[in-house]
Length: 127
Image 1 (cartoon, one colour):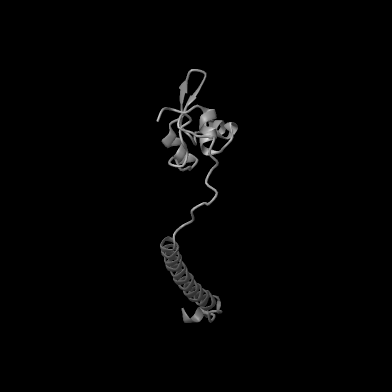
Image 2: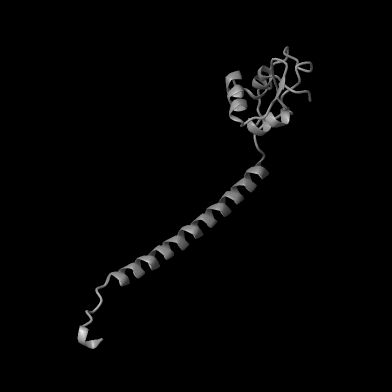
């Protein structure tokens, strides 16, 4: 894919030209000078502003006479089950972490309480 101008990059990822320009000037998006503007690599653009290059047709391949598909395809049941299983595993790990931290807090509070108890006074003649 050939390098993109700021305007083409903005149209491709659905952002404004000023957003792309700010990302370049802040160093978030790398681009090279090309004439009066910048040349932005599509892979670099996708890294900073994620977009699906498979769903975006090249300007020469675009067919604006056909309306976009009215039925968006969602994730499959298998994908949702796997995501649900992974989220439950993450939740279990977080619960274990919370239980461990509570146990540590209880032990720390007990040590602090023991340390704060007044120590018996030492008499000088017992030294």
